[in-house]
Image (cartoon, rainbow, N blue to C red; front, side, top):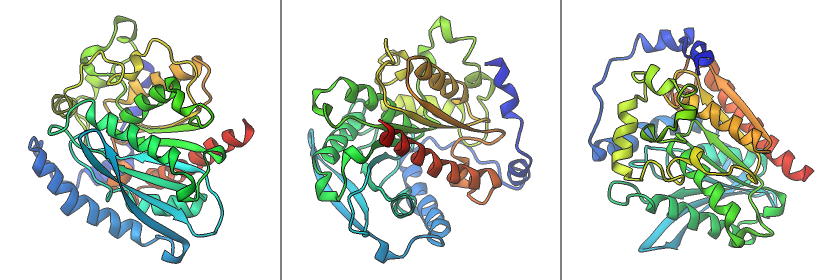
Length: 334
């Protein structure tokens, strides 16, 4: 949307940081990306988040292997030790469908579990290109059902709140899962009560219908943004191998957006997927969903994880907590 262009004006604090960073060539090797996640991203995040990690006596962490079509996947469950029954949040990590494990968001979810009084279920779905669409989506759906079936085991109750959240590619998966769950009799009596999307791609660049072209300008205008570029998205899409017009790849294309649970969304202003995020929130709101959105002008995709000391990153993490509280309040009011 043309009226959104000002959101890409670089944040002064981020711009000063960016000027000090080296310009790196794009990485087009999946194994290199995975090694970077394991060897650089996880240790950095754990060092930063570990400083404010709650005492180990305040939570327990248990890993489970769950059955999926053709194998098993891991989920990591964090439960506060207060001896109560808690709301449940299933979390789907980002990584362009090609990288990511339980580890990058582990410390974040431990902190959220204690601070907000929720059980978190962190899903390690199988990755492309070895496991292409719809395997990652199906894995996450199996984990969502497993969490609903095993809530009591985890000291959770879906009647207190049943939230599904994800970041980036994980947000794409979460958006699609919300529609699956809407249609599935399995979730009658234990429906999702909210979903949280952090800067997801909700439409494939090759699938934008004519009616939305004037509103979705950021993919072209911000094609060379820091961190995430349009060519990166096309690389990830090639690995994922989803049909662009399939709504389970491009949730914006679902014929009806009615009947979805409340949505909390976070959007970065200097991000190629910015406009589709803003449009998606509007479309769901107009279809009757309660929505809440926070926008971070002048910063790129996943900036808060990469530079957590930035003022906007601190606000982003605080907003995330408030967004989850808002979703839980919506549950209490229903």
